[in-house]
Length: 193
Image 1 (cartoon, one colour):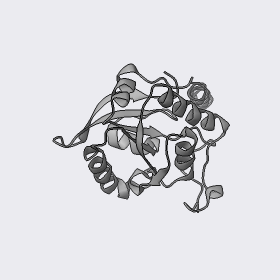
Image 2 (image 1 turned 180 degrees about the vertical axis):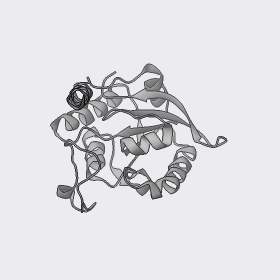
Image 3 (image 1 turned 135 degrees about the vertical axis):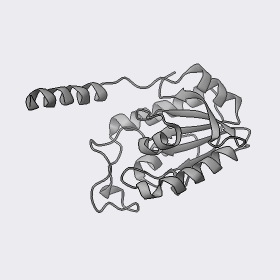
Image 4 (image 1 turned 180 degrees about the horizontal axis):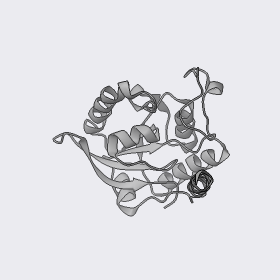
């Protein structure tokens, strides 16, 4: 019984890792091209594992889980797709984790600024409500003519939107300050169109 369960779990992991690059949907791409929207994206693929090694430090990338070459390719592909679809990125905000900062840099859509509200929530549930409140405030207040790009983590996107995206995939949001969430989900985004 235990070996059958282990085989089932191993198969699930293999299938999850073998997934093709996530596709963006037309609604998400059109909304971004029109401007005035927010795209919140999960970082690219990293070294295997969850969370970060014990004792990791934000100011030392070598102590964290970082992008692997496939993750770098995902970030480049997503940036290329946004440029090809003429999405004007007006501002880029990123989690302080190196994998998010590198994803933003490799997308080549603008210089990223740190926003601690986008930091990883995995294993940090005590920060959840404060970070969600701050993210909702940033999203609902967006009035730029272009797109606000947020680069974060799967745990953070899941907590905010209820969607758990694959690597380098995300959600397109319309600011909606009149709602409790501060946004409406209008589409998805991923490395391929």
